Image 1 (tube, rainbow, N blue to C red):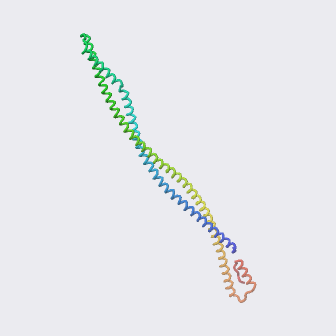
Image 2: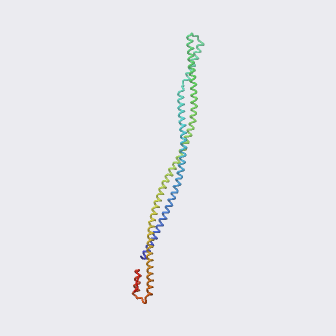
Image 3: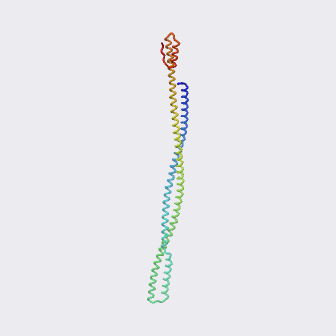
Length: 282
């Protein structure tokens, strides 16, 4: 093989090696970019975990206040119904009836005092007075019960007002906690989108990295082929050179054995050198 073939192989070897190194350098840059994106994604995962924990803690607290608020609302509704029913049962005519019975009693008592009556008539009035006084006593007890109920209703309404204030406070807390949980939730969604975007970029970088490494490996294989070819060419040249040197040494040794070397014999040796063949002296 000639020098031109060796030079061509060496040039190709250098080209393949440079392309391999260039592609590997580009691949390493992509690998570093990919790893930076992975680090950024890991930080986002940590932040996402914190945001979820914060949101869940707020939601748990909000649930407690919701339950307390709903309990208060149930109590308020029950007390309102109780007060409404109590007022409905407390007759508004009791005072009038009680006053009317008292007026009749006073009138009959006065009639007994200022007018003479027969025994029969007097007994009738006394009996009527007895019945009216019994009715008045019954009305008095009903009025007393009514006042007691109204007093309870008043206490209930005060309790309702107190419970309403507590319920309002709990509801405000629920609303405040809900807004806080929403902020955490919005950040959770935002981080999730950022993580998905980074995953896409990481996958893209990794695919590009793999492609460049495959190309670099292909050029590396070609460089190895050229290197092997160079070794073979140089080996053949070295072998040829060694054979030529051996022939020259043989020619020199043979020339010492003869007194005269003919021109045609020299030409044979030279031709043999050219053809890498061993010569036999006559």
